[in-house]
Image 1: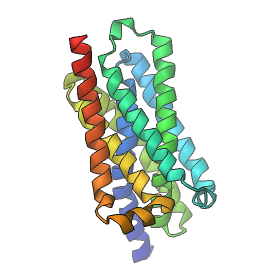
Image 2 (image 1 turned 90 degrees about the vertical axis):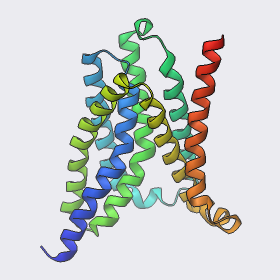
Image 3 (image 1 turned 180 degrees about the vertical axis):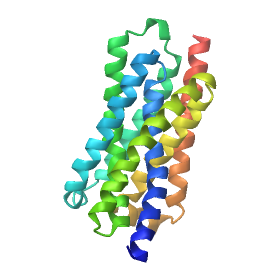
Length: 222
């Protein structure tokens, strides 16, 4: 147990808290309108899917890094998910078929997990510096963070509906980060304007929130 181990150990805790938070927001947002029992199932299934995806992605992370525009595609997909979750805010809960609602929530969670788990896997693997125990520790730590975090998010959003916009903004910001961090896009964009690294995520977050606001106004005036 040398200093490198403990530095990696601490870094993985911080990375899991930060990067698993996005997944928890998706799970919480997607399951917030379900009845309590269905919400628990969605959280459990969503967490299990996220962990299994991270195990699978850990095994093929090196190969995935070679896929052109993978992060950029993931960013666009996550942007669509953020907008979709925000627009679904105005759906009437009483009209929601419980079975279909659970399937739709889990489907949305899995798609988002695929997009966001790659960053978590690469970050944890890098912080572990080849230590298999630390990689396993990072995966194990993500389970309670996802389950507890998504439950808190769902409860808070049902209590304070305006937090839905905050959640959607976080997902939009993450989508922007994925897009500008893609190796195939990062270089050309930074040559054009170095500030796009922090500007694009903020722009994506604002766009998602504005779309949600416009849709709510449109629904109210319809």
